[in-house]
Image 1 (cartoon, rainbow, N blue to C red):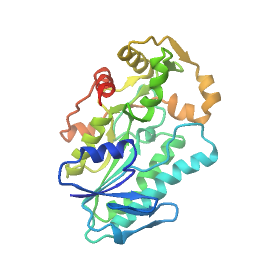
Image 2 (image 1 turned 90 degrees about the horizontal axis):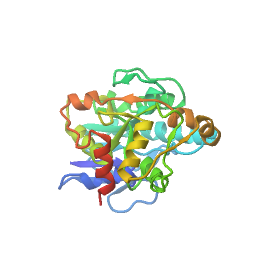
Image 3 (image 1 turned 180 degrees about the vertical axis):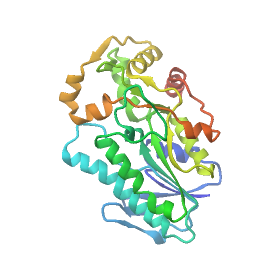
Image 4 (image 1 turned 30 degrees about the horizontal axis):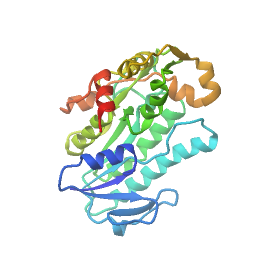
Amino acid sequence: MRLLISGASGLIGSALVRALPAGWEVARLVRRSPGAGEVRWDPDGGTIDVGAMGRIDAAVHLAGESIAGRWSEEKKQRIRNSRVQGTSLLARTLAGMSPAPGVLLSASAVGIYGDRGDEVLTEDSPPGTGFLPEVGRAWEQAAQPAAEAGIRVVCLRMGVVLAREGGALARMLPLFRLGLGARLGSGRQWMSWIALADATAAMLHLLQADSVSGPVNLTAPNPVTNREFTLTLARVLRRPALLSVPALALRVVFGEMADEALLASTRVVPRRLLDSGFSFQHAELEAALRAVLQSP
């Protein structure tokens, strides 16, 4: 297969490239001047070098602005535009190809569900309210031109991806190793997570699962509360976790992002992924953290 990937240099994209079966060829979408095996695109300008793409059998779209940090109006616009404009451009481009690729895996996020307390959320649960749910709806809708052209589109609603080398866990580790790990707010909010190895394995599975389309929750089957996550990570690292960060302090530092991401409760289960026959290597948090932290 020849696979087109955006975000191939990021945490998840680079892991996916490493996990590809022998014989798969990769074309990477890049914003800079392209090298061998690369295709230049400019989502802001609405252009892709279609002539350099060649035959594409499948595409995985992972590019997008990080939501980490305090959100200014400019940051929020970048978050939205990087997801919606890039997805729309890629979906329209793939739809116009002849032959068109068979499948597009397009990143989304569990943030589409919003803050839902203890409610168990599946792919059939409606979106929530707020900035991240609004972005999530627009993000997934932007992939529809590909679906309308007959391409099988899967929207990957990703949870927190656990990896030692990047993402949320990597930002937590220095404090936890100093014994300064802390629950956020009450700690009762649910966190939906997935080990990086399972995330890439699930994407490879979905590339070949011809009966699966639409939204798919890319999360482990056992979400945990923030309190449980904090205690489990501290136990794995053999450090105490006696502290808590008040919700008010998080709001002062992070503003809107605190309520939409750090304090929001999303108890997501991967029903469609499990129904499609996917088997998780790391379904329980403690075993997942031990595997992630011991990986080379």
